[in-house]
Image (cartoon, helix red, strand yellow):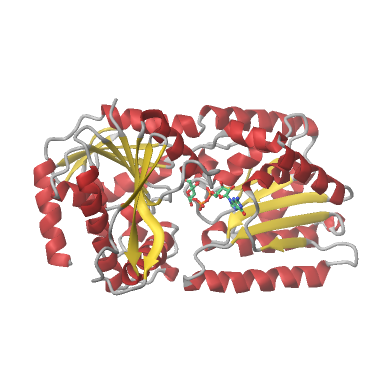
Length: 480
Ligand code: GDG
């Protein structure tokens, strides 16, 4: 059996409780075959880049998995990570051109670190390794590896949305980025909408030929594409909801809110998640349906994220002010409409909190998938389930049709849906929950990684690798 090599911006220790979907999925697939997980250590080398050894690879073996990491210099961190990844690609891929900061130094840093990753990874590879690269930080990695002679099967999964052509084309390096994807053998997206956007882009901009529903030919290469919606580890969430910490949290919340109806939001504090719009919608609920005053409470957990990027600071201030205003305007001596928690909550406590909530508000303005929506459904009591209010702009909306779907920009319509969720009869809640749960179970995280890896193993490898490697190289040299 081929060894699996996973490459992502950051790695995680397989012995520790996983922090989220990617870590769970990667850990499990790596442990099955044994493998290598390569990425940035999370450490910044603050000395001069010319100091010997700062880019040395550190390897640590845990069971049958090797974690191999490198540090980044301050300049690489500023340009590749904060700059191009999180100040260009993240906003653009979430349709926020207004927040993108197109700086040529960022693009150069992004190329430099992708090349560095390839240089450090290349000597570790064996000929029949299967390589799986994750997310927007590493789009050009396969092209860099091919330029160094790598002929392995390489797959790529994009966790964030693929924007439409008109948005993608605003990135100065869009052609290079999209061409780089053709150095992979398989590119996976979260949703059919993402696949459609990518197909439309390469057909219009690169005269790609669609050979079949999942094969595209352009830049002298054939690429397999597909939608592989990421799932969750359902049993893990169900078990955590029933374990001690889960039950304690559930009971404490039910007691604390015995006279109230609890609504819940759990997100990283990120502008893609639609948090200010959610507070507006909740305010609208209190205005339109006064029976919720003194009765409905929204707990909004917003875990700190990317605080070194300016747009996140603005969002933090905006949330502080919106939550302060709604509590000031509507709060009573014994009731506050919003409990806003700008801290991380322990993973073991989340399922109990999900289960104690009547309604979850998962209303991103744009999201690749959104795992919180699936976790909330999995944690519910099937005999008395809470209801999911879901943005039509989350990737999860393609699968979770029985949620109450909303347009998060429409505060009035969202408030109506929240009211409907709060007053939904038990029978309807049970029916919707059953349908949602069966879909979440069928397409869980194990299905996700095994179906992607199965497709990658069986993809017919294109023979045009050398040509692609050369064209990738010359393009890079002229632009670097
Ligand atoms: C990207 C894409 C895609 C949240 N707050 C806390 C906490 N969380 C956990 C949740 C969930 C995870 O973090 C968040 O996952 P999402 O899918 O909602 O969002 P992103 O982080 O933006 O992830 C996204 C995902 O990649 C996977 O492909 O779905 O679209 O943007 O698991 O439970 N966990 C803990 N404390 C918190 O306060 N412990």
